[in-house]
Image (cartoon, rainbow over all chains, first blue to last red):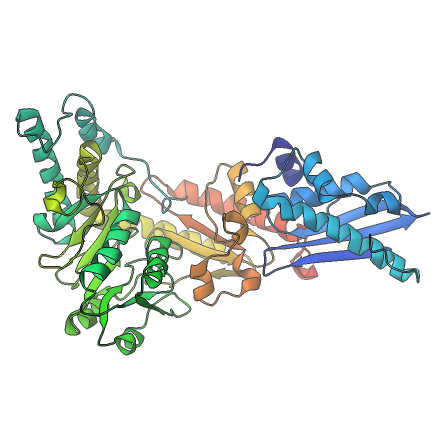
Length: 129
Length: 385
């Protein structure tokens, strides 16, 4: 696969890899059958993402997308994090091969799932867009 | 560690080829002396290919490689024998050069039976017998599989084909230089091979066609290759292929002995890792093939980390293919979808050493662990972080 230097950097030295005990929200998307699963753990303080970690089963692009996406939402408000698009993740990685764009999609979806899980835990309505 | 993908042309091969790229550039079809020099060189190479597989010199046809040979065998037999029937039998783990040709033939009105394989990737001769119909014209089953190295019971298949008067083609692309072949004893009517898999040049292969076989040409044009395969011969590559197969067939025992030792050492070492499974047959397999599945991780990321350590390998993971489909071979062997992406193929070559194998065994456990630590699928007891 022809990956950018940035993808290779985030793949080789993933940021925020791991899990958070007693986290405020978890989002898991993808499935093993397709070959990629992304799981995002959030720690939320005052509607702001105080900490974020990920676990990913998947290719180089999936791991790099998880790493970059978590970097991009760390410290952001939930509203700001919600608005992170897959395109923004791919652009921050200096692009992904077309066939791998779905990996950045997974990152966006995993963040949405995690935020909604947090809202649900607080007894709030999930966001839809 | 990816010699089933390709091999470098060996020194002796390149040396034999060079004069035919420069001073001996004559067209074998020309009647003057330089043409005759080229003609003689191709005929010498043809004899070497024939000797390596127990065929006659006039049963060997040079092609552009394994894909063309497979295409020619299947389409050529199908269309030349249409009056006898339109049914073809193959296996579900063939190379795409055979499988995709079969799918295309189905679109042309032929019927194809794709035989299942057992968990080791072996076709059952009994199931083959049951699949034969009155209108079956061709059986195409590979000699050895490119992904898992499983060797098929070709002699038995050949016997069944002969008893039923059905043409038998085998894709032997991965087998040359590893499995001794005698087309007469094995009742093979057509056999595909490719130069670059046994240290010959790329872009050159051959199809063995038993004398008396009814087959249409794939390429129409000039009268080359006894009017069966048009196009000016790739003389340097043909010369190189001839030299390469002569060396490979001549050294087969010695090569297999060394490779087998390395293969077993590698498999033993890899299976020490927890949740690791061997794909393919434990003994009926190519001496150079190792294929394992590591649970909880994905193959492309595994390859990237190995690449960073200077180890080049291959995987059956969907994420490593342009189709995003996991390996049809592993799937046909019943490897569950959930773990099929974690497969790794290491294919050894004559250039690999025991040190290379030890290096893989030294580096791989950490890489697998690193990816397992990263994966949400990994149970807690298989994590170190």
